[in-house]
Length: 186
Ligand SMILES: Cc1cc2nc3c(=O)[nH]c(=O)nc-3n(C[C@H](O)[C@H](O)[C@H](O)COP(=O)(O)O)c2cc1C
Image (cartoon, rainbow, N blue to C red; front, side, top):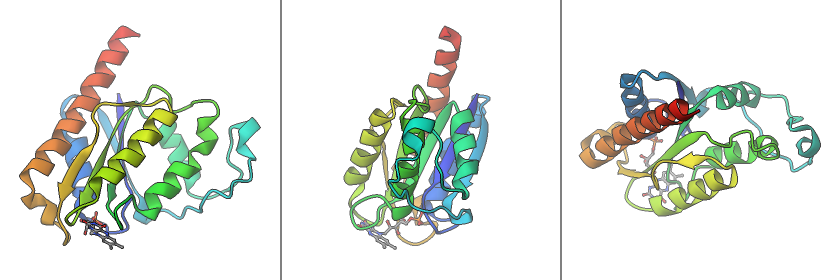
């Protein structure tokens, strides 16, 4: 079982990364192999809407998204994390969603177990969770919760949010357990 975490923040070691790592560590306790993608390490362009992928299922843009596609496709479970920026997801998170349009046509993310973590200084997580949940449903993915809201502003502040930490761990656990059940049934 593979569980992938994707951090859609440009702050390395920031609050979102801390919580996505917590979720992955919990999944690892259930014998998941885990992998982490930091958007900060990647150079990814926005979808141009060229439609090139509609028939081929392949994006025509050649950039770091190629590595992300491989990891998304081989993952059984995926944890998406984003800070709240102006009441919604970061540009990085939206860019990532849009670039999965090439996977949308063949529903290649269908059946992947998933969940999202939103970190705000104070408010705005509900818009993030709503955006991610619509994305998950659009891609035929299987969210195991309606999403995690956590709070902290400065790097590391989220460690003081006990509920946020606990919820992120629980998300990782539930993703791993759901993948495990899926595999047992197949
Ligand atoms: C451009 C920008 C916009 C932000 N907008 C919001 C917001 O609408 N609501 C909020 O509560 N916090 C907002 N924040 C604070 C971040 O959500 C918060 O610092 C978060 O912990 C950052 O996560 P990170 O450490 O993973 O990057 C904003 C921060 C930035 C840089």
